[in-house]
Amino acid sequence: MPNSYTLPIQGNDAYVDINGYTSGRSITYELLKANAELLNYSFAYLGTGPIINEQYNAGVFYYNSTSQRTVARWRVPTLSGIHSQFKFTVRARGGTPSLNGIISWDVVSSNGTTSSNHTPFYQVNYTYTNVLTITVASTNTLPYFEIRLKVQNQVDIQSIMVEHIPLATPISTATLSNCESDNTRNNFYGISPNMFNQDTPLSSSKAKQMADNIETLNKRPKLLFNMSGIDTGITSTTNPYNAYTIRPQKGLLWDDISNITRGDILLPYWFNSENMDVYFNLHLYIQPLADFVLYFLDQEINIPNTNAEKWVSYRIKYNTSSLFEIASSSMGTPLIRYRILPLFPNSLPVTATPILAMSLWGV
Amino acid sequence: MTVFISQQMKSPPSEDTYKIGVPVFGQVLQSFGDRTNFLAYGKAKRVINTYFNCSHHQTWSNNTLNWYGAEDYGYINKADIHKELLVSDTRDILFTCSPTARFIALQIYYESDNRDTYNDLASIKAKVISSPRTTRTEIDAGWEATFANGFLTGVVIDASTSHYQINPQKLSTGAVFIEPIGGSYISLTAPRPLFIPIANRNSEIAINFDLKYVRLKSVSLIEVEEGFAL
Image 1: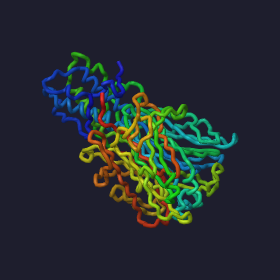
Image 2: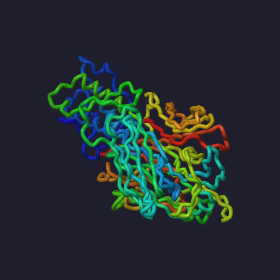
Image 3: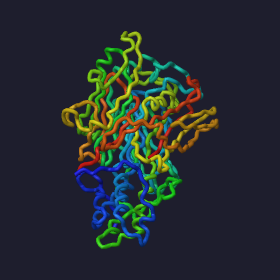
Image 4: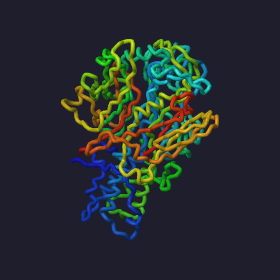
């Protein structure tokens, strides 16, 4: 019998009533089954959902060339050995029939590159066309995927949304691994409801599997923030849709980064995280033409001049001194702002930021 | 019945507590249940930090910036950005919410023009719609923030039309005022977390913004709950 999970929606009792485990009461198999199913659900859903969302002010993302070009890239975490589906939703417009906008996505994993195109955009007004789903061929052994956006012909993008799709089918009973490389307890055991049938023993090995599952899910990376500049490769031009003059970009510019500084990032804060070896993973796609220093959550990152475009990764300590609690209800999740302060050596920017894309993972 | 979910991240119980030959203690099983609830109803909730690319007051050219001045961001002509602020805009943050998405709290970083006349007219409306790519059905009428109701703030530096600046500000719904202050989820209220009806959880929705005389710079969105009622 395959494993299963029940969606924990209101009214369906898909939660663990821990009062049922009070000493002196009989342990019911229904309660143990609920516990197992909820762990299966967490394996299927934790870390899924939106992973890339960028919005472009009217006309800012404008491309007009018959050559296909990779204009943006992001790095997202591998959630497990079997989470391999991505959903892409784009709101955009294209040009005349001969210049219908073509928007394509690459998903790069250890198995190579998987690509797909949206239905061409031709409308005068922004529209959603088809939603694209890309399934990576087989297990990704890398702890990350790289997602690339490519455009061709006349394209004006208003927004993009990329989502990691949760598992829809029951989880295999096989031992599944999480791909976070430094996770020592990285096994997840798909728990079959049969394991907790009436009159079956509550064995030590079952408890060990549940403990390993909890630890694995505690440490599963969750994407918190993603941004990429757009490298359209064009010089200053006029967007024909609104007659605004558009400047060329390549990577993240000073004002992009100050958006984070001034706007902060809103994140959940789980109490006790700092005592559980929880950390942030900061991934930067850079092209440093000179040495530069970045201060991120009060920690200094030195990046030497290499002149080549490349990804670099840093582990950032979970720094509670950089947290600002803005509001909470007594019963719910506190909302915590993380103030990420990307300070650069030059107080007045005279050179471009060498950061072309930035991804932040954490709890 | 209301069940409260722990907001603490904890390790599973020690292996010594479930070795062969060790009696099954209720406290150990409670620990498994507590941590399982936390993962499903806490950590598995969704977070979006949306980045609005409207910046580039510099130009990349051979790794050297051409500096245009602080007021020029967005477009080469200063007039363009002010022109853009005068244009009404509508934006979707379209995503599949989680099965436990009960409320969605927002933090919005926005810019407005500091002129009196524009402040009087500026507003941000946020609502939730289902089937955003087709029927676009409103499922929470949401809220409106204006200078008049005090939820948009700004500094009027110079009321003359010849000297104006872009005015960056922040607006947060927080996690309080989960319930509408004086009405229902089908009437417009002051900023509060947006409600996702049970029928629309685990489905594609959009947080829709209707903007007048403002433009968004970043939006943070996070699923929250007040515990959950059964």
